[in-house]
Image 1 (cartoon, one colour):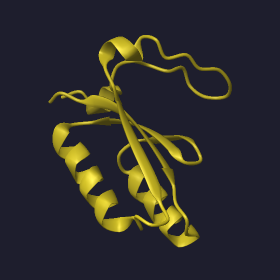
Image 2: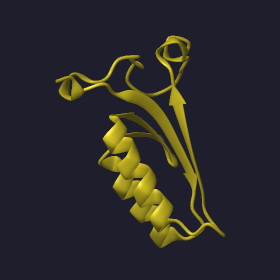
Image 3: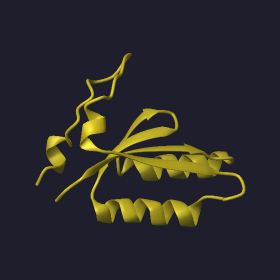
Image 4: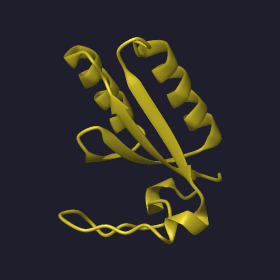
Length: 96
């Protein structure tokens, strides 16, 4: 199953909704900052994430951005600071 790499960032106006969005996204990726997740998702998983977020957020108060990075772009990712080394391949447990 082919997986794409997505960065999901969000700014949620209500603490209760913020916690629910964060907990929901933990099932799909890794939090790399307080409101930023890196996710390796199949097309079906991506559709499920977009659907849930679209139904859940308050469009007058909240903001969600989802960026898909192509394989070429992933090779150009730079990082520094505390964390594991960035990999441009899905984690082993996602490879079928």
